Length: 86
Image 1: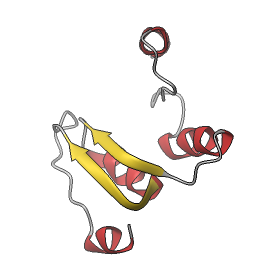
Image 2: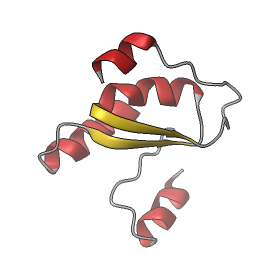
Image 3: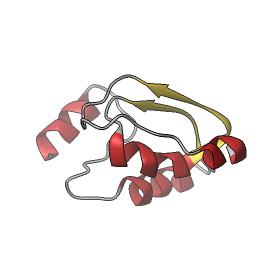
Image 4: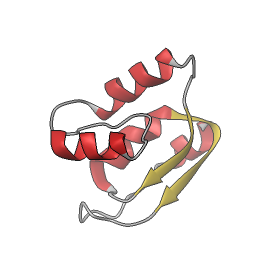
């Protein structure tokens, strides 16, 4: 929610996505475009599930995926084709 977004920004986060009100992919792509970046090099994921699957679309070639936990309750499955092309 907005309180957590403001808290994280006060802590110095460059970009925070409130998944209750915006798409992970669209928000991240806008942020990356504003910085003239094509994708991300490291994906930190404490949630798993659908947010991880969506975020895989943002990876650069050779990116690292750091899986921390499964707060969504769903253990992530990363399709082999994503690993091959990313």
